[in-house]
Image (tube, rainbow, N blue to C red):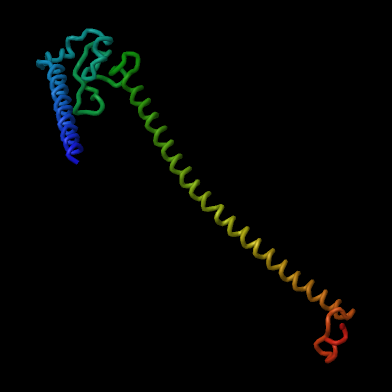
Length: 186
C-alpha cells in the first residue's frame, strides 16, 4: 500500500512538472512572437491618384471620367450624388465597369438570389405536401385492402353455406331437425 502511494505521489509530481514546463514553453513562444506595434502611416488622399487604375483599388476612392479626378467616396450616401459624378461616368472597384452597370448587376444578382430562395421555400413546402400525400394514398390502399378482405369473408361464408347445403342434400351432414340423424351415419 505504501509503494502504491509513493508511486501516485511521484506520478503527480511528474504531471505537475510537465504542466509547468508546457506553460513556460507556451509563454516564451507567445512573447517571442510579439512585435512592437507602430502606428500605420496615414492613408494616401484620393486626390493624389492621377488615373483610374491607381484610384479604384482603394475602396474609399471613386474615379470620375467626366472630371478625370479621384475623389473620396461619399460614405454618407449609398450612391454617389450627381454633384460628385454621374453614375454612368463613375468607377469604383474596377475601371472597366461603370457604377450604373455595377448597380444593375448587383440588382440582378440580388433578384436572382431572392428568386432562388423563394423557389427553394416553395419546393420545401411542396415536398412536405408530397410527404403528406402518400399517407392519404396509404389510407386509401388500406381501405381497399379492408374492403377486399371483407368481400372475401362474405364469399367464404356464402361458399360454406352452399357446401353445407350440398352436404345436407346428400346426407353428409346430419340434420338437427331429424331426431335420429346422429344414428344414421353410424
